[in-house]
Amino acid sequence: MAEAKSFEQKLSRLDEIVRHLEKGDLPLSDSLALFEEGTGLLTACSKMLEEAEQKVVKLRKGADRQPEELPFEDET
Image (cartoon, rainbow, N blue to C red; front, side):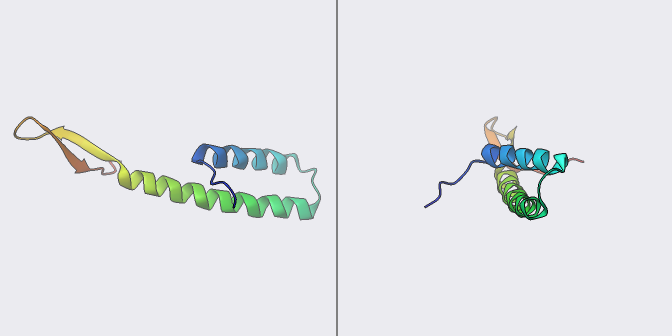
């Protein structure tokens, strides 16, 4: 069974793929294989970011001065 890669490992591999593709010196079949791998990594990284964003919460002081969790809202 393949070991699950961390977000950072996937992002690093994606960066490596982009550098290879930007050189433009690979055969078409190799470029397509790297492109497919890269799109898979991009999808996986996006999913991981979405999952992490759903876990982020704001903390504020409640009426009793104790921390209370609020859902994270985009402030843009």
